Image 1: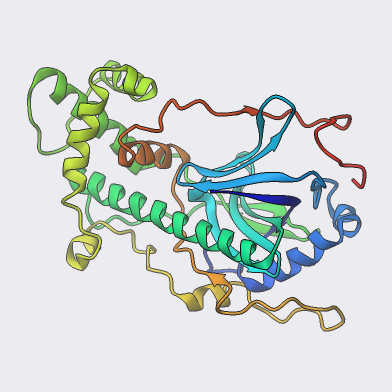
Image 2: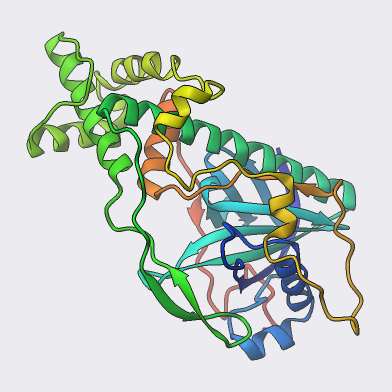
Length: 342
């Protein structure tokens, strides 16, 4: 379902120490900046650079897709993956979506995007859709991760501490942020599992665990995965992998505990309020963020490659290769957008 919105732009926000994602306090502060573009752009020239043009927003497992209509076709303005979304809340007519953002190897921060809907009811509906679809995506990612770890025989996994790097947040303060690990064992294992399954399909053999395979076999499997339904073996590989996935029960605490990292504890609703939830300035009007409006997302960090392969795996490949609208070219003299107030 598509909803008409206006994009208010984004600002960077951060999570408090020991928290996975920014909480309500950070979103409150972000909302004030998004409502005052000139003030926000004194902190950073790209903050709160929204469009007055009406845009169309749709939410699906493939992502948050925002498009603009030209005379001939729809053009993509934003294509945001769902596994990056950590927090969403609707405040009156505005939906605030917080998403993890990798700073090109310099660390990890969070962006708070603002979307203005036509009514508070539509804003609430969008927030609920984003939360529900995000949670469904994270469920698939966790199920696939357990499946891969079970096949690879890796139990009692413990993460090494991530390196810290200094970055500057929206207030100009320098903060330490965690670097994403370069080596992602789960993604590598999933690639190996896909390659091994392809070999079993082509050769008509069976296997019980991930085995050593050559770089050439991995490349062949990746090519098959990229081509999708154009490859005769693709759907059969999907079918075999899904057969194994169906045996993974996320409610089986004993099984899950064997393959969880020590810091992968389930989130609670209280975490959303505790994550950076401090007192805001008293001299400015404050929007109300109530329990009814907050949609809890059980956020966890997954690599882009792992998420992309997982969603293809769970989707039977039916959406793979579908034609997407072209991306809009946003320039200062673009006639598609009204950006006169930037």
